[in-house]
Length: 387
Length: 245
Ligand SMILES: [Zn+2]
Image (tube, rainbow over the protein chains, first blue to last red):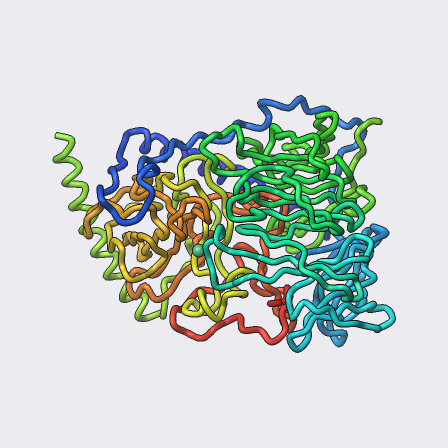
């Protein structure tokens, strides 16, 4: 059965490789046509837009990632994914805190909608709870809305309490001590004019207070054991835009990284590191994937862009955006030492991730992904770079 | 000599377009819509990507796919109400002023029409029964209705719906049926590119909404319903995840 599935998958990959060649061909034609200058200048005097940006921007492709980093093999066997569910299911998988189970929202048989779990080695799905919501990192708590109010519940026991967020989504700190939420207009579309006020309270919803208002930004996450949090935007209309660290006690803010609209900000599991994307700046040396410590040190632009997740503190997993390669492949970047490790090879055709939906386990030893080949969950054990 | 050739080609294309558009209308009337599935097979998609070059942080990024996205679901009673609560196109982020390419051969159908997606928009009718619609353009495209367009021709410049070029500059691209323009199709089914690979960008999964009664439906880049403009919401789910907080 597995063999047949693999056979179908390989056939699909062969077709994809061919269609990839066709795409490259098409894009080649497109560039050629553009280079021939078919562009017609826009009408002068058109209403309302910045005059300085009327000229077409030169499209300079992102440099091929393989051109820069010196990627080293990890030695030993490379990772091979293993299918852990059947019959198609389960988007947005999460891990249990002990990395033994993969969890997802589903509705199976008479158990109905809820959180289900499958062992990381595969097996039947087990119904865990009918309570669906935002779970704490250790999964002991779940936050959910009900009749316009938000509750946090210790779901294994069933006791719950109210958080005074007036129905807004709440964000729990890693150690389950604090909670944050934000108020802001949903009708204003202009990202720079949007204001969001960030509130915090104890996990029990007590001592609620306003911490900071951000202009053109939002709450990003808790760091430093709940002692601080990260926000994006400006702290006042005239302050610089970027990623700010806000101390929980004092509300003092410090700019960690200056940029308008950082994309895909990702905080490491223990909150010591931060990765983010800068895109479409006229100065292309600013565009790409940046990493830094959440104390503001070690700011580095990586010579690779793609899909990224933290495997551990300072260890970033990246699937490079490399359209020349036969298939997607996985690297690990040790950001402090600037070392790059090859965890899977472009020749391997089994990293068939759907919807950019993949997550490393808390112990850093595996990833789970949703497969676009069969809509099942697959788990891949990750090799370790040498000490 | 070249211009004569071009004119002849233009006339021929227009003639073929009219024929096929007429056939498309008849087919649409009979079947209630353009059949997308036959065109959606790998390697057989009729259109090309509307930007030159590979995606990336210097060029363009797919920031919202078509369909039952979390964003459209959250705004299903406002921005996306007319489109049944679906994101009825794809959003490709790019710096203001990035040249936009016609996704196929065709004829200009409208410039700055009532279809929205301001500040400027463009609709191109293609001879295969589809129209492509380009929204949030930087300036009014300098094109005439009826003008013949070739695939890959620069037809517009990407802009920002908030007019600042800083807020959320992107191209909103739709593919509709030429006959009625009342149905929008998933552009990922019709534009040739390795979209799953293009989606492997950034730190977050592409988010679609799960209806808890039918939790496996409409969750993939390609598993999305058609949009019938003006028809009731298709995602006004009573129980859904993620929550509409
Ligand atoms: Zn859009």
